[in-house]
Image 1 (cartoon, rainbow over the protein chains, first blue to last red):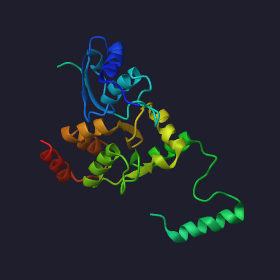
Image 2 (cartoon, rainbow over the protein chains, first blue to last red):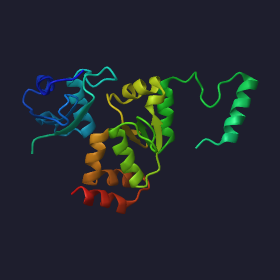
Image 3 (cartoon, each protein chain N blue to C red):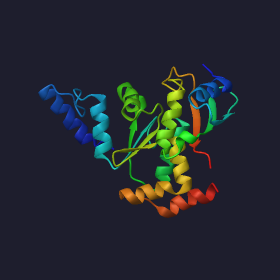
Image 4 (tube, one colour):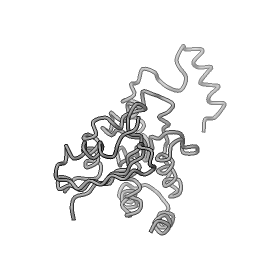
Length: 80
Length: 145
């Protein structure tokens, strides 16, 4: 099942209200997205910690064969 | 590579003792994962094998490691549903591939790619005493600059 870019952005924004969120639909199939999330809360965290927090915000949408999102390329960082 | 003689010996053993060959089924997936990541310097949990990856993301990470001449153990999660789910619980990370160096979870495809291009992966291998081909790593960076 595919997901809209808007839904992904909403889920991320709900967890990171002040973040700069950019979603790109990579393949145009609603299944392969890239998300860049820039948030102050990431400062001092390593990438694994940052991206774990984003995955948590997506509440299992990435999970398993039944997951709605097959592929989300994540980039996370704190603001410059 | 499995040695055919060893496999045969295993099978004969199993006949004699009633034990399963090769793998101890009483181990839980978490035990198996722990043993694998602590027993090997570099481990990649992936879809498919390093010789024949079955997903683009797994293929990319395996390709980087292969190209950099890193010796690593590959675990095909498609062969075992308990491991496929278990590895996600183990690292609290929802996706495969997952790279482990000296027992420590490094990241998935995006993180490994970023670290390769920034040189952080070289640094990690240096710090952890993992052998790799520095020139190959530079070539990857040149090709992607």
